[in-house]
Length: 315
Image (cartoon, rainbow, N blue to C red; front, side):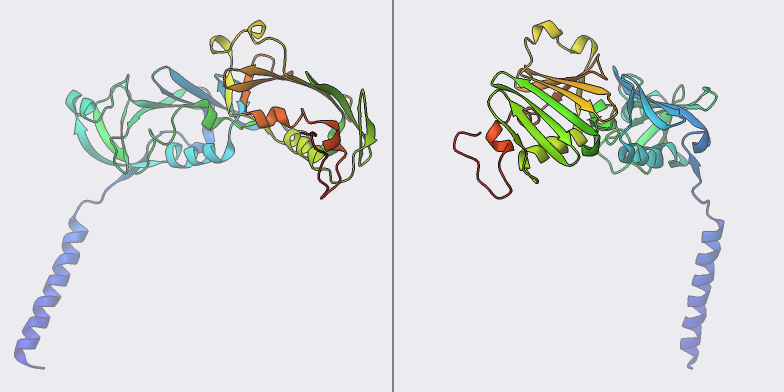
């Protein structure tokens, strides 16, 4: 090897060694948990922004919403929130400090998105305020402090305290094998569906027959009762008075095989419909017309066989 090549190789080796030495001497970014409590010992969480607030409480059955209503959480969304936020870590490098930094990053108390965490002994452990300025990651500070940090997650924009995104949408979940009798009343008809083993029987003032196996109209009623969802909930001052809604446009009474009962009522409300269910007496659930329509079908549709077109006017 030529002398010039050896010199170049030696210089290159020195550069590599110098780079490794400088890297080993440079300070490494330190990561810390945002919330100073073991995730297994979190007992209560509150998220809020302005007047909107949701409180989650840990129960022996799992996490529930305890405010503004008592309800099951939507497990997928809550799981992501717990992973990204409650278990989240941040770089301890201070991005900004002082009142000007707090205002610049929109982390004022009245503007920011708050997350408060209590431990299993109901002691408030951490209060963090988050904001997003359209960047890939959020900025945050701790309550009562003016040091601003960055968390490598989107928090404020992803986890807003809107109840519709956090509550499990199921209002009722009755499997077909638990149904014994379904009584329906609406302005155009009243009918009863009763079950004997796997066979359903239809009866109204005019017609009486066994519902053919695989009947689509019957299947749609069974399917919606198995997963009766509603994302918007009204209660308290935001809900209309029952007397202002007038008569129900449809009433559904359900008798289950264990002799328990459920009562569903639908009311016309503005451009949509409100539903009441007897096991949630203080709440209105906003539903679309299709939910009501499933129960207000005419007798010939219940008598149609698979692949058979119903008579004209049956709709």
